[in-house]
Image 1: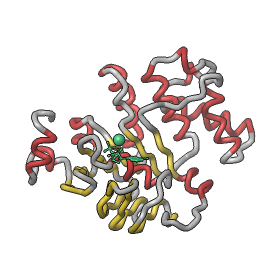
Image 2: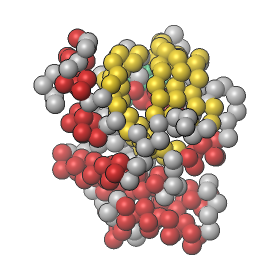
Image 3: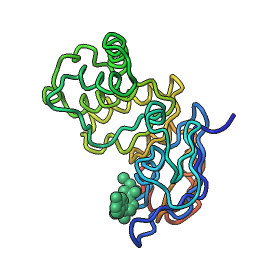
Length: 242
Ligand SMILES: Nc1ncnc2c1ncn2[C@@H]1O[C@H](COP(=O)(O)OP(=O)(O)O)[C@@H](O)[C@H]1O
Ligand SMILES: [Mg+2]
């Protein structure tokens, strides 16, 4: 079976800054890939390339059967297959939780209102927020807002979820409740790519870990690479953090 995500020798430049210098990686169905590395090492850029939010300069990306190069892509189909969640929740403040979730279901996925509400309610149950369906974002904690953002992606019924440091803006308790939701998705077999600073979480959950450094895959392996780094860079990055 072909991987859900595959990057082959991907290069990306912003102006004269060479941000991705030949990234290769693959994620199979049901796998969880954690991407770690210092700020500025290119983690977000790599993730954004997977959702075609950035176009690559060189190399090949295949995501859920879509080839992402500089030719036009069926974005509507790609966006239905791939959910992406960022550190900032990007919820519409003037819409209720339910309306935030049904928006794309109705306008992108073209579900009827009734089907959209059903899908939204199912997703809200998955993130443990069924009782907040009529609330507005400002009435929720940061952790709850992030769980709504996750529910909004889940409701699209994606084959792949991308998470970019989704707990970085949250205090430890709220971080815990969001990680719990991600862990439940993992148990259900969701394929995921997770950029994270939560080393213990990555160690426990990830099928594989990629350590990026200066735009390259510097080290890759199971959680064991965190315990026995092969390079000085990963050793310094992990420090006493595990
Ligand atoms: N849209 C952009 N325009 C110009 N430079 C960018 C852009 N996005 C990222 N960069 C630069 O690319 C490098 C890698 O950024 P990023 O992928 O966000 O790293 P990370 O997520 O690992 O912190 C940084 O030096 C950043 O400033
Ligand atoms: Mg980033």
